[in-house]
Length: 231
Ligand SMILES: [Zn+2]
Ligand SMILES: [Zn+2]
Image 1 (cartoon, rainbow, N blue to C red):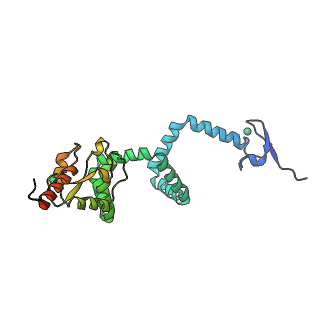
Image 2 (cartoon, helix red, strand yellow):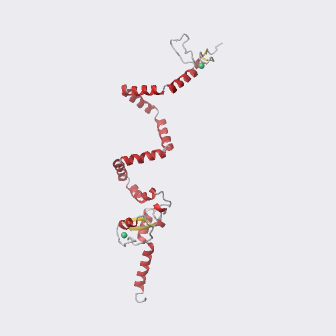
Image 3 (cartoon, rainbow, N blue to C red):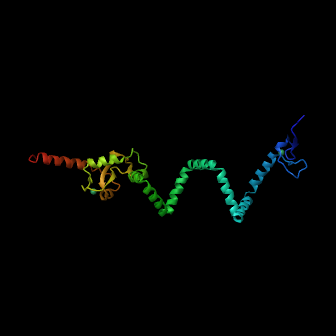
């Protein structure tokens, strides 16, 4: 009969198959006296009660054998590539709010670095730069509204003769939110009028609709040219 060898653990007193014991060359039967489960339990207790010493040991090891630590880390990264990528992905999902906060903090502390990175990115993605400028303020206030495309914006400018609705100046026009985003205005065509940069700045956070002015002026012009004699 070919029975599986067994052994009694000196710690828990249980009789277990020999495969439940680790090998030990110097032992009489070639195996440790305590079973794997008991050894594991001992380690657990040891780690829990010697946290500081172990940390100190690791710290000292790191300073005395830095190249060994580096090499071990490199090997680990190489053999656990997939797991590390997955862990990183999960970490980002779980901690996205924290990460955002940390990034914001870093950008505040290193504005020149953040600007440089942004500059590089937008130089490589000019279409993103346009979109950013258009939607930047909207994002800042988490505005509701469906946003505005470049075409829609051009159509609005055209509708008002490509001139500033406040001063009538033609030229570079900026998006002005009639009801400011900071006051809950929506970010779409229904709340947008073209103003020159200086009128836009002057308007600031006031709610002013210049579109009526334009309509009135247009109507009166029409009135003057179509029927100059009648008043
Ligand atoms: Zn045991
Ligand atoms: Zn103006």
